Amino acid sequence: MRKVIRVVKTPITLLVLLAILGYGAWWGYNTYNIPLTKAADTCVMTDVGTELTPDRVTVRTYNASLIPRLAKDARTYLLAWHFQVPDYNNSDRRLTGIVVVGNSADDPEVKLVQQFFPGSTAEGDGRTSHVVDVVLGAKFEQLNEPKTSVPVKGPLCLPSPKAAPSDEATDVSIPSDSPSTSTSPSPTAKSTKKK
Image 1 (cartoon, one colour):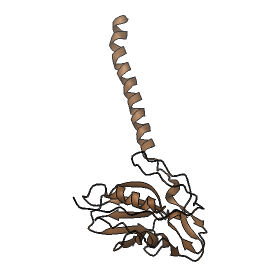
Image 2 (cartoon, rainbow, N blue to C red; image 1 turned 45 degrees about the vertical axis):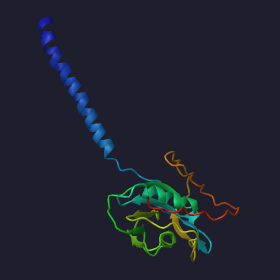
Image 3 (cartoon, one colour; image 1 turned 60 degrees about the vertical axis):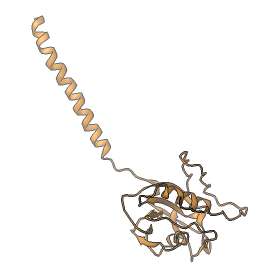
Image 4 (cartoon, one colour; image 1 turned 120 degrees about the horizontal axis):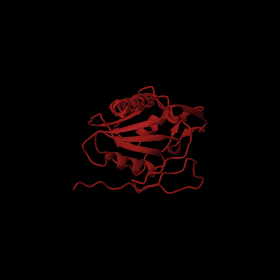
């Protein structure tokens, strides 16, 4: 009897372990395929008054070139002008210019961001979040006094206000979502020298 138990014990143990492994694989596959919902996928109708200012616009910057730190430098530049810039990264696209992407090329938030990147082109992809992407394929000029507002009529659909995530990788703090009531001096543009 003991010999029979020893002979049967190993295959049964292997079958139980194989069943556990199969269940784990099935559970992992099904969990991986659950669509993730993002709060930023929709916008909220927001009354911004008669003009749209940078503190109401959420922007992401992407480097579409081989120039190092381009997206990070653009993020720092936009943060200095009080844009909400929670993210910067590299892009899979390769460009030779600068493209500003939003819901529509004619949206006020796209036009406002374009004012900070002279010579940029605008694209619309129908995104419902109204977050603006700046895809940089070339160096950009940091303006000392760009036009910091766009006239609007009526409420705009803008990303819902939320706490911006902290970014420990950069030395720039992200401004709060609530506009400041005090007036601050215009940021000074950094000089870009070729080395």
